[in-house]
Image 1 (cartoon, rainbow, N blue to C red):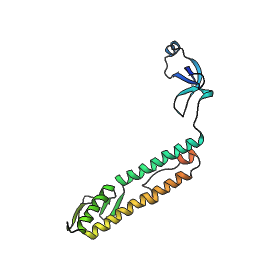
Image 2 (cartoon, rainbow, N blue to C red):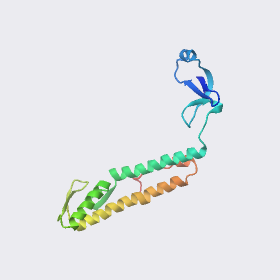
Image 3 (spheres, one colour):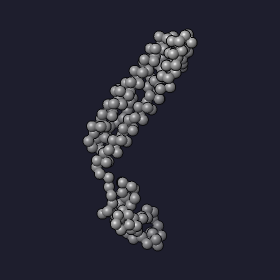
Image 4 (cartoon, helix red, strand yellow):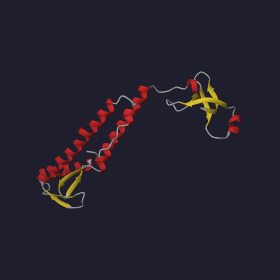
Length: 180
């Protein structure tokens, strides 16, 4: 693209480019109209014919890394904000890491006889009085919910990302943990 620019390094073609509209200022700075391009390697401007570009393999790798990060963050966000274990028809419990930790501590307290029951408020704001068997069932259920997210859904996205052979295929992958 034609822009007002000044060559900084003749060998590499690195340029200083005026990206605004003050042409008189650019001319005063010694800039002239040159055919320049912004590099996707370092975001600097170069003479078009010397502009370095990432290889297609590198672009594909970066696209896969970005999609993998999206899938990983999506799983974490889903667990922290939406994943639930349906305890009974009226009560569900969020399958967060924090709830698993609290429920595990309660299970130890019950097993050691330090406590006789656990009071827990469900997602629907119902107060539940839980015994050791209830806590064990909930703990198992929460673990199953998380395992399904990590070992089934996340792994499926990861495999889909790994097998994609073009950037377009990677970008077409929709990460949505709400889908069944």
